[in-house]
Length: 115
Image 1 (cartoon, rainbow, N blue to C red):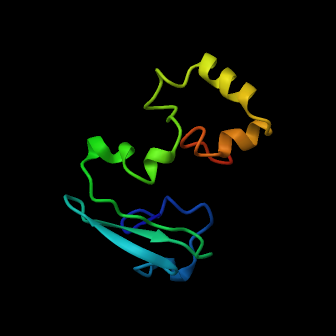
Image 2: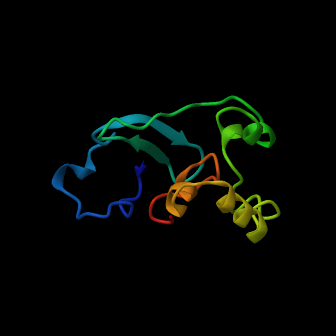
Image 3: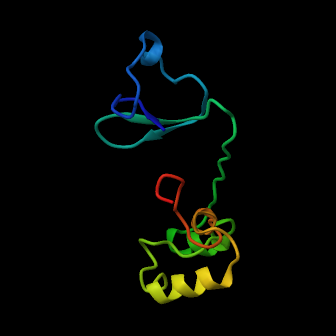
């Protein structure tokens, strides 16, 4: 994600062409309401990502496909994702722990750096 009014998202020193908007390899740009004016560009240089827009109420979002196939979220579902639940899940699978953690069908939102 690249923000039109913030270069702090770069982890490399900015190049001379970094000032161009929309940025190189952008898939789509969202224009945000409010002040200060800001646009957010989704950048995908490798062209591997997919974006799915779903028109549902926020209360129903996690009950709608594709999110309903995901496992519990560690932040939102603290009552579900307990030590007992995780122990039971680990005992029921015959995969390495990191593979289990990275599989979004088991637990949502854990990426490679957290795993």
